[in-house]
Each structure stands twice: as structure tokens, then as C-alpha cells.
Image (cartoon, rainbow, N blue to C red; front, side, top):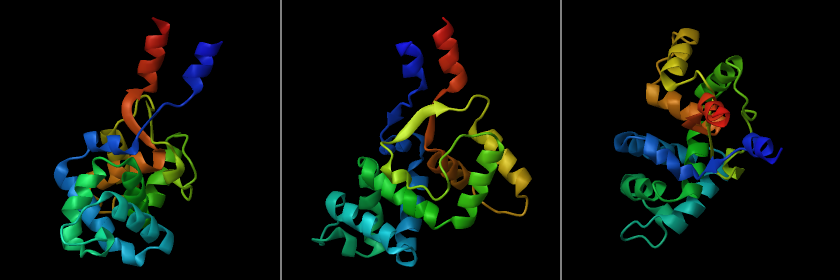
Length: 186
């Protein structure tokens, strides 16, 4: 009975584990885009990123790294992004907020495909990290293909689609639900 209960509980890995799935150039683009988008986002997003920037990012010549110009903040922020789960959560939350149309489209797509995910407006930064189980018979290629089929007029990069899927689902594809059941049967 306890084994079945343990199977039902979600296993989490820290948010910065996403770096294993991100290319360095894409991480820099996400950080740059997010830092540039912060002034246009609601205060809660700016305040969270600025607080974590002051805590985790070192920009030479600035006592308060959050006050540094974006151009000099990008590289140190991307470096901290690789180490700080809280910074990853804050940055991805702000990144998603800066892409409202894509966020809603991905949410609608995942729900239509039967994914069990939090409401689009839920604060995912409160989670302990990403869930390690990925829905069986799903992968990024299938989701990207379904997105392009459902939204043929959208010009969204595949990486942005994948990142929004990961953020909204709060899942990284470490283990599929299918693999888990096969291991349990053996």
C-alpha cells in the first residue's frame, strides 16, 4: 500500500535542473529577453527578480547588481541562473508573463492533449521545483508539431515553445509515466 502511495506522490528536482536541457546561447537569450522585459511587467515580477539578483548575481563595479544596465547584467545573471533555483523560477515566471499569448496558447494546447497542469495564472515559483515525470507518448517534437498545426500563423521558435511547455507543466522529461509503470511491473 505504501509503495502505491509513493508512486502517486510527485518527485521534484530543483528549478535550476532545467539548465541540463538548455543550450548556453538560448539561456543567454532568455535572460536578456527577460531582463529587457522587466520594466513592462507587473511590480511583483520586477521585485522578485531584483531581490534575487541582489542576492545571487555579482556584476563588477556595482554594489547592487539589480541597478546595473542590462547589457552588463546578462552574462552574470545567466551564470547565476545555472546555480540558483529561486532565480530560475523568478526569471521563467517573468519570461512567461512577458509572453502572454504564447502562454495561453501552450496552456490550451496542453490541456487539449490531456495534460494535468496548474491553471495558467498559478504562481509556479511556489513549487519546490520541476516534476520529474513526463506524460507517456509525449515529447517536444510532438508538442511543437501540434502547436504549429493548431497555430499555423504563429512564428514562435521551437525553443520558446518547449520552454513554455516545461514552465507551464512544471515538468522536465527525466522519466516518462510509461517507463515508471514498466519498472514497477518488473
